Image (cartoon, rainbow, N blue to C red):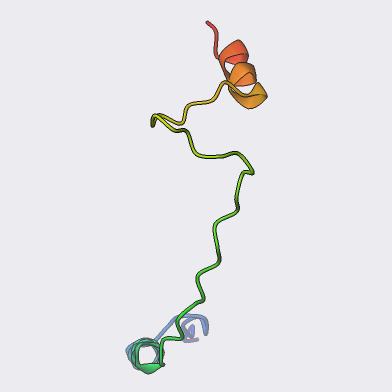
Length: 71
């Protein structure tokens, strides 16, 4: 009695057809128009900009960071 091959094996025909579909999908996605996104305004912190440059502020967040980063 001849044993048949499992039906779950992929044939070359199915493999090349899948590759063709994937390639066509990639071409279609590349051909779609790109919709520009609106730039959202950056959130303001409510603090004025420093007069002499810099900008480092010892905030509670920074204090907590240095407290937890100690070795």
